[in-house]
Image (tube, rainbow, N blue to C red; front, top):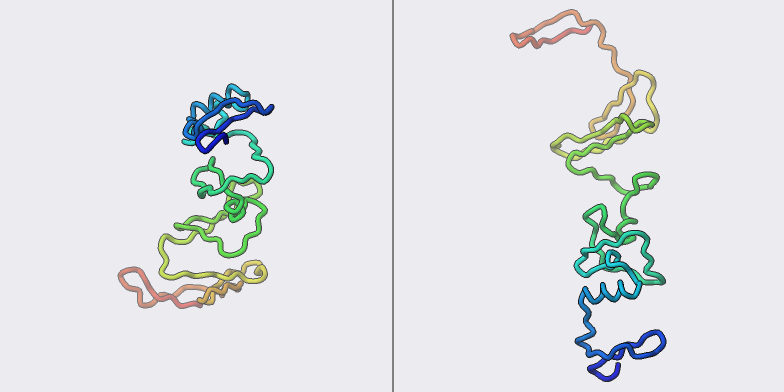
Length: 183
């Protein structure tokens, strides 16, 4: 600083390159581009402009302990994200999750086969009157057993009851609905 109103700009050897007022030190975008291009620092396509019109590509090293701060939450696939934001997300594979996995708007949970061709899916109905959680049994059932609920969300394996032979109808109405006796 030469005085309170002027600034001296030096090169690497200590020679004064320019004497400028403080107002002159505010560079335009074109001046930054020209300086970067003319001095071999970066091509115009690699200069990040204040309006965000040029995207940075490739590997960029800000070096040392420099950080980029105040990044908003990403909204597009190409947006940058902070480490804290990325760490809070579940990885597509091999991640351990704690807490509840919540699928919005009756989305499916799909379990794909070994070659990712076919899947088994679970999906909630479009509307439910109350939330329900089913707790699976601790072990596999036997051949022919069915999964049964106790009405409170606990599931267990049971053998189906034999219905016997159905051969007699009574109280059959015009709707074709009747009561059948098991024999």
